[in-house]
Figure 1 (cartoon, helix red, strand yellow):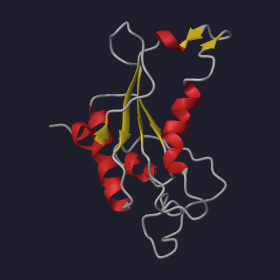
Figure 2: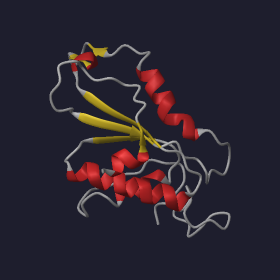
Figure 3: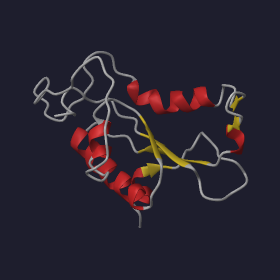
Length: 153
């Protein structure tokens, strides 16, 4: 049994082309916002991104790319949890399995802390660039060590 079978809800909303073949990208969502400090709701982000994707023009005339002809594999969302350590463990197992299968991943969140669970699955030489208004380098935030405000430390 795969960790994907154990942890994923198979409710994909983005469909790939009918042509079959190996997908060029694998997508999954992480509905998590348990350590938020302002307004909750980013747990709905993955589904909102999918909904927007399905309601925009998917042909790019400048690049000549029609996303309807691109094979994208959407695995759905991870199962919901409100425990940060459980989410990080689940993501590490899922992304380790997908990286081992050489999948090009797009992970939809969810709050910042999902990055910690995924990043540790990639090879050490993998680069990481963050664009954010905050450093997110605290040791803890609101007495929580695994938090959206401490995931980069």
